[in-house]
Length: 71
Image (tube, rainbow, N blue to C red):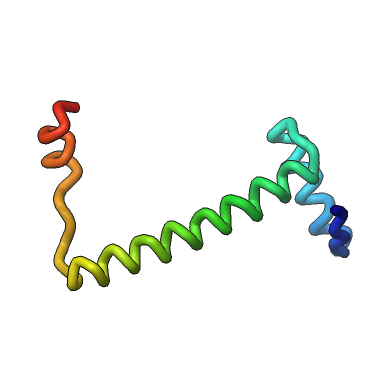
């Protein structure tokens, strides 16, 4: 499937330069950005659900969890 996006010249230049800097294609750069954004969204939804299920009580400190797991 192909999706077309219209960019202003300065936007396209910035995107192209950043993709070149990362050593990837513009297509791959945009895919990464979109899927990173989707992943962030689902992480935020999961966090909100966990807080709600925990009645807003704070979680456990990472240091405590690491000790419990022997890490």
